Amino acid sequence: MSTMSRLLLPICTLVLLTPPLCAQSEPKPSSTLITATEIEKAGPSVGNAFDAVETLRPRWLRAREVLMLPGENSEMRMSQIHVYMDDHDKGDLEFLKTIPAELIYTLRYMSTNEVGSQFGPATGPGIVVTLKH
Image 1 (tube, rainbow, N blue to C red):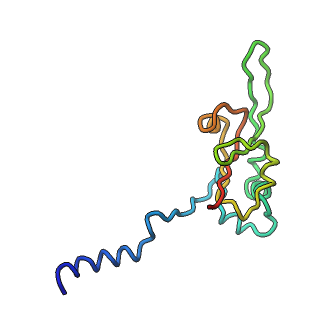
Image 2: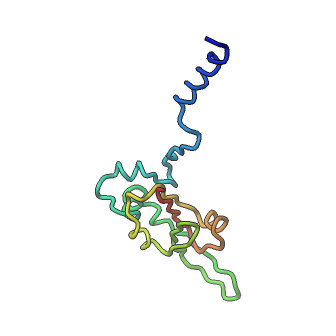
């Protein structure tokens, strides 16, 4: 066996045994993240994104923050959760009901501050939907 063959064999073996660099592994679930695997394990009762949140992270639906609106006649009001997908505000929680569970890659809860820094001025927390490709 030539020196070149002896060098290439371990490299080829390493390349064949390791996943491709471009393969993306699913993130780990957390208190602020719901994954596709979690949704699948939840079973047939989870038909859409709203069901997934309601079943797996019900606290997200109750997450409200009191906002003090600036201005001369400043007022306090409860924040409203918004849904974001493809870097756009899709509206309130009702939008989650239009997303079939089998299309979801992740659902991520973000605080008002996090939403504001990623999407611009925010009036409350958000749920960011990422679909499978």
